[in-house]
Image (cartoon, rainbow, N blue to C red; front, side, top):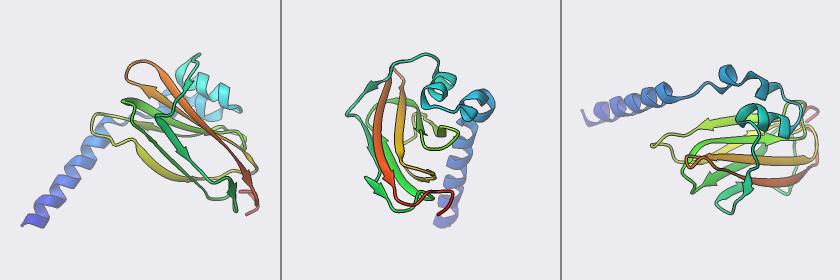
Length: 147
């Protein structure tokens, strides 16, 4: 009985998260085809100047042994509205955007593909209307498209 109630609670939580999720691909299609990080940021958020912040933690290796699966983690203590991850090594710069709500823990770990060495940029859109960023430059030993 307790397991069933737990499963129902998890299902309700998943449905609630799906209801609040924003479809950035449909709402901001130009951001997904932008060829540079600045162009993707502008298509996503408009003309902004994000401030680098110690409250945005971006973790990635200094040297990725395989560009086909570069581990990237992001977390922040900022009360965020959205978190975007971008990179400048591939033809399209925007990787992913996480929509935040009051029940979301802003702590993500993903693997991205990078065909060559480059810089990963994170933009945090704060609920205070300000934008914050963090960057990490890394070397890719084996390209993502060949690896």
